[in-house]
Image (cartoon, rainbow, N blue to C red; front, side):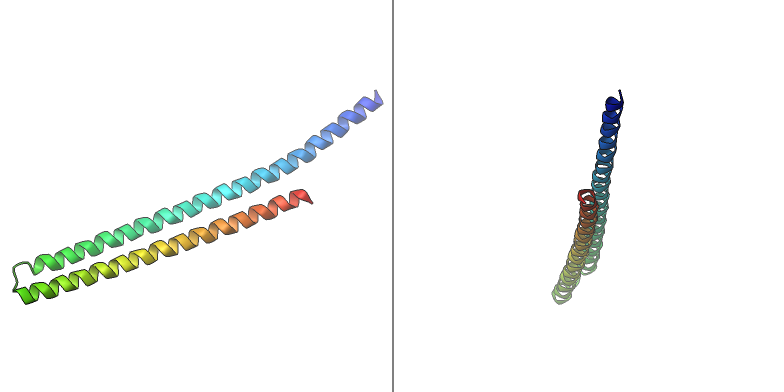
Length: 125
């Protein structure tokens, strides 16, 4: 009877230790999931902001073109050049916003991965 009790106690201890490791794995996975979601939110936000910038500059360029619609050819050409510059600057600004968002998201994912890896390393020791 004493050996059965000892055996059951040993099994319970092994299960308890196994649960701790499993909990660490679950926590590491939760960290990865959370950081991936945050990174995706950053990407979505920066892309939405970039699209807003593109839309606004496109509208500004169209307004410039419309204002010069009935003007003499030289004025119309100058307006077209100005509208093109507005669009180019808007596209550059939008691209920069997307790049910055992607860099932030990548850095966040990397930090989350490293944190999760450190947590899993604790499990091994």
